[in-house]
Length: 119
Image (cartoon, rainbow, N blue to C red; front, side, top):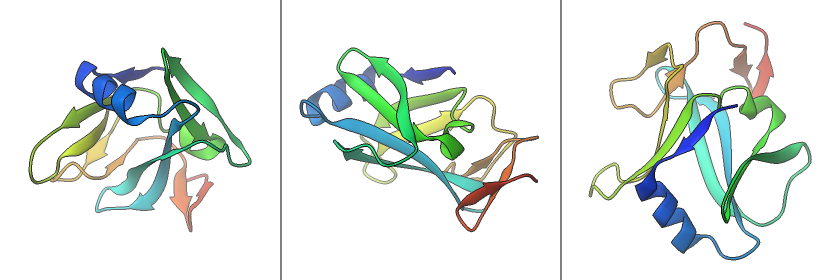
C-alpha cells in the first residue's frame, strides 16, 4: 500500500501528535462523489484496526474496510482560511466532487450504511 505524507503535513503531524498518539484515517459514505476521508488523533486502537504506515514518529492507523481505499493516498496540509487543514487526495480516484471533499474509486466496493459491500 502506498501512502505519501507531504512535508508540510509531516511537520504539522510531528508537532501535533504526542508520544503514543496516531492519526486514524477512515473512509465513510458521503459527499456528492460517494466517499469521504475522515481523520482523528487517538492513542487507542479500535477492534479491526491496524497500522498501515509508520514513518518516523508518525503512525497512520485504519480499519480493514477503509484501508482498501487508501492505496495511492497523499496527505498534505493547507493553512488556507477556508478549507485549510489536512488534505487527502488519492491518485487512484476515478471521480471527485468539485470542491474536492469526496471521491470514488472505479471498480472498488461501495460503502452502504457505513459498511463496505460489493458494488
